[in-house]
Image (cartoon, rainbow over the protein chains, first blue to last red):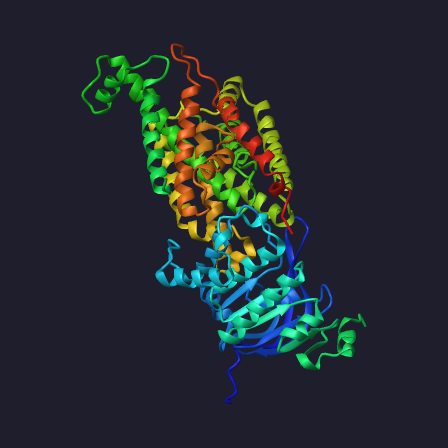
Length: 253
Length: 345
């Protein structure tokens, strides 16, 4: 087997986010993590474990191009991430943020349809291909009956399935998911992860997800990124995850 | 009934109401005469012709343009601030426009040059410009503040407060100006479609047409923006550009109307909700024209209601607007208690 080209490669990356101070919105960069190296190939699922506030979500958003890296390079399909236009980037990367992001009055069908945004023209009109992709995923996720329901009326589990389906309708090569299984019961957790595994293994997508559930990460992911305090970054095979590794990741010192 | 069908019905209703508003007023002009005068065949009375051309036609046209303008501004602001209660009046954008106008009219008077000469084309353009600039400044302030605050109600508080601040400036300006200016300013703040001349109408309509076009070009990004700023940018929306476009378009829409009709309340907040209940889709490609039509209709209704037939008196427009709009807003608050209390986890 020839070594596969990585889909996303992250090199010497320093993370940070803008913080605003005072009414004048003077901004400065809060550096939160340094010297991150990793690669993710098509067909691979990587989980990110680490304590709260260490920068897991910031890493995801930086990989998505929503936050600029403070240092280092990110390459998507061998091209610098910064060289992509927002639309070209959105054709390759889809995100699932945690929670409902304040959406309440939107209908499920409207949320799902937004997934085709980077692929449609000025009028946002669907081509027959767009319809086919959307229909396939809706029927796979069994969301056909709730298309007219408002997102706020759904359970957390169902809503999360809608957001995963929306990301897949975007047909990305790389999926970034921020705590996709938080608030979910066992049944939904299993269903969501199985859907994700199906997409990664059968459709050859890559997925990167953050989680607080080491067992889930070990069970489903190929590799695990451990983001400890003080930029102690480590990437290991999921089967090599040990209690000791977890302990050293989560201890503050 | 298909959405397109509904749009056509609204359009027909708008045309009927428009003709109706030409008949209705202190003197009732028969329908055949209105048609004859409009088609250039001459009416049976010169007075009627004068009333129609000098008074009613510009007034009804103004109502249509202003109604469309404020409602579309409200729709964009509701999507952009993700707040069902956002509108140019509530968030103090109109007061920003008023402050701009007050600065020009009264401040100019204090400095010794007169800009009240409403017949001068440049005077009118100046008023529009100052009003648009005032609205833009206020929008900018609201935008900055909205980056800090989560939750719809805090944004409204900020809007109210900045409205108070700008009216305190206006009050100070009023204090130093003469009685005539004071009176004309007070009348202007009550809102009116009837004091807009044809040349003012022209100056008002141009920026509004530009802004309506601008907002329609942003319909697709606005649809994505309904999912929130982060989802929108992950979908490829250039959020910075969208923000500039919306800001500019809202300032042009609000500022132009405020300059000539005064700060008019409740259109921006109520009409998008009326439109959403008639057209239950979030798609801005449909919602923008639908809101514009509903806004024109509501403005014509309000304008017509403010005229008593057989009397030259007219009620201040804002009192009618409040009577029509406030119940809509109240219903909305009671219906959507949950969604107005900030975001769901």
